[in-house]
Image (cartoon, rainbow, N blue to C red):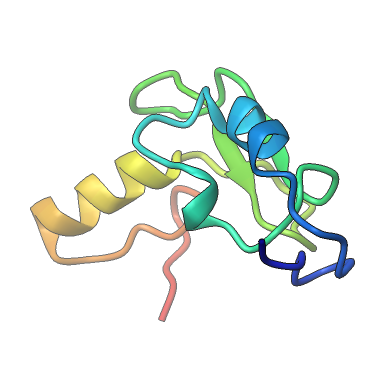
Length: 89
């Protein structure tokens, strides 16, 4: 069991997996945070209508879920960033 990278609490994999259910194809292994430090916003992805994960410290809800962002990178070769109109390096 890994500690949360933010608060150092032991990650309860069952609780986090339940919280991550709306994010297709992602599991607790894709995150190093506990359920208390993960923020999931349902129905926010502009491409698939699925849930998005709000990275810690971000105040703006992302436009793309991690799966759609990954798909866009695979299709275009460019990272659209978390929000439309922004780019990440």
